[in-house]
Image 1 (cartoon, one colour):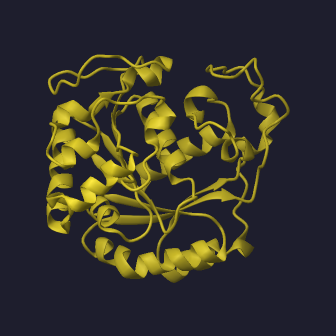
Image 2: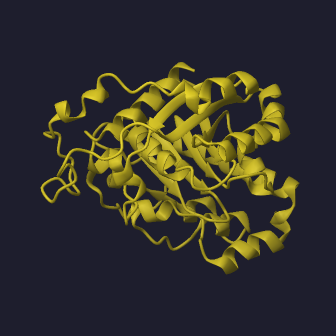
Length: 307
């Protein structure tokens, strides 16, 4: 299989694209794939919070030419396996593996305002230079780490960094919630930039998140007895919908929007309030593999493979 780069994008923030991107990448690695995950949401990066790590060097340092790629890419394979980081440095000739044979390599952007401003005011802020840097970043990761998938979280909207992140991606997942604002903004995005990418070979899909459906898991699903471990003994019958996922409500406008834009909907993920309103970001697919959200992440993976 040829390596695939996948960008999670949205018209505006708050669609849950980062949560899906992180869980998507972790599940791919857990399934035995060689995966890279890059936080290119330069203006509001947050992926490091899902992995509970403060790196010594950031993608910002690579993008402003103050560090090599080997300095800023972190081996997260051990995290997928045990929830802990391996301190081994990045080496292009070696690949760490999970117990399933997969690997996960992570690149975080610095959330400090002064670091964001520096990227905007240095020479790398021109569109052409940004694109060159990102192309080199992609190609070096694919080659050195022999990736099957490169997953990219982008800045929402139409900005230089987000457009160039989309330009290096094979598959564009336009993430949105059901609602008039998201629908109108998504339509504008497609008309302004997505049609151009599609004409040049990229594949675009709508990815609905937080769709009206499930809300809360069964009582005590995330209780103390299950928190923070891969407990596979949770009673699946409590979530009868797992075997028969809820249908998207046509009245919410998804079929109409897909038809108007000529873009297929690849997945519709229900709203899970325990995830949406959690005080702490966490990787559901690793901590709660029997949670129905994990089921939908695997369904999205299947959809990508068969797209």
